[in-house]
Image (cartoon, rainbow, N blue to C red):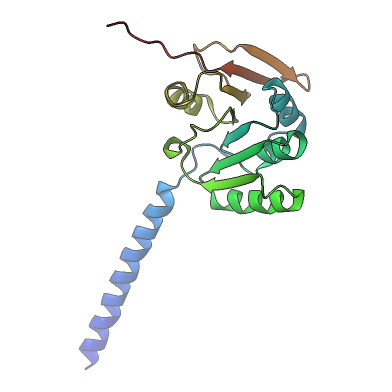
Length: 188
C-alpha cells in the first residue's frame, strides 16, 4: 500500500512537471517580438495627419499596444479602426481605453500575430515596430494591400523602400510615410 502511494506521488510529480514544461513552451511561442513602448500622442497625431486619415478610412495598427492610434483615428477623424497585438494584456487595455473614449462601436482589437493577420481592408496601416520586423512585414504589406493604401511608421523605415514623406516630431522623433504602389503586371 505504501509503495502504491509513493508511486502515485512520483507519477503526479512527473505529470505536473510535464504540464509545466508544455505550459512554458506555449508561453514562449507567444514571445513578444517588440517591447511595448507607447507612441507619444504628438506622434500619433502626426502619423494620422500625415496619412490624411478621414471618416471613410479603415486604420489598422499592427502592434497596437494600448490602442491609442486607432482610438484617436476613430475619435478625431471618425474612421474605423482595427488594432492587432499578440499580447493579451494590451488587448484588454485597448478595449478598456476604447470603451472609456466612447469609440467601441468604431474600433476592435484582435489578439493575433500580425504576420497571420488579414489586413486587406485597411486604407491606412500604422506601425511602431522594430527595423527587422518592418523588413519582414514589408513583402506582406506590398503584396496584400491595395494600391493607394497609406502606411505610416513611427521611428523605423523599411530599408531600401524609400518613404514618400518623412516628418520629424518633437524635434527628434521620425515618422515615415509610404503609399502602396500599383502592382506591376507582367506582359504575356
